[in-house]
Image 1 (tube, one colour):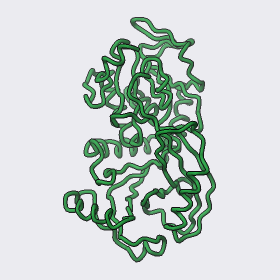
Image 2: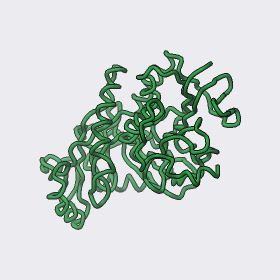
Image 3: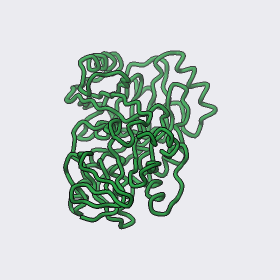
Image 4: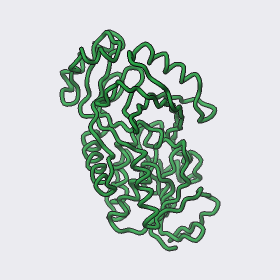
Length: 352
């Protein structure tokens, strides 16, 4: 088989990279083994323009969020399914200090922040004592539907090899790469946390962290918002809610833990007034990095090898934007944002 690009991984990065290549009618093949506990599949799917205790704007959100929203809406039309909806975040202040921080930030960030309305209604569902703010707009992406429906299209178009990628079978020369019976001009790794062991990119400053979440039935809770205090309650598929998440930088495995479940249930029991039933508990490792900036572009020594990875917790917003940027770089030689371009690590990568 002859293609122009081999893409390793069909998480959110691999999905958008293959989408933009398909838009340009460029031949490619995606190699993916359909793992269940990937970071993309376990993510909440939230795009939030405001982050952290200091309530600052997420990096590049003015460019990234409108681009991502447009990209998801176009994919909705192409795949004929519901992928994106606006779902603003109600952030409950858990302490007087957090309320004060919000009140101080509010006059400086009126584009995205406001005081939450309908406090009397919220008190039907939650215990809270220091008020709540609203972040508007936030967007909710049904990542699992996106991945499933795009995968179906890849299969129909013979663009998917459903198999575990074995790096020992990859052969590289000056003009091409060969994997099994597939010949391509380049291979792009969208391999998520597996990138930490990738022989060409493992020296990048990855800082993988583990996240856990619960899936629960909360029949009487409106699905109109994301609800957040020390944890988030996010509308999920099949009238369920995603509840999480943890950020563990030191962990021995990627399995769910009883510690997280009990801690989360304690928060829910104190915060949520409604009955709930937990139906699932899962965990995954995010491909985060020390800089909190993506890894995008071609290897400084091996121009046949590229990467789209390191999105951390911001994959839903960053992946569409930087997948498109990478394709424009590959096809039209347009520059990659220097804060994301993997060439910023040339000295380190040339050792690999």
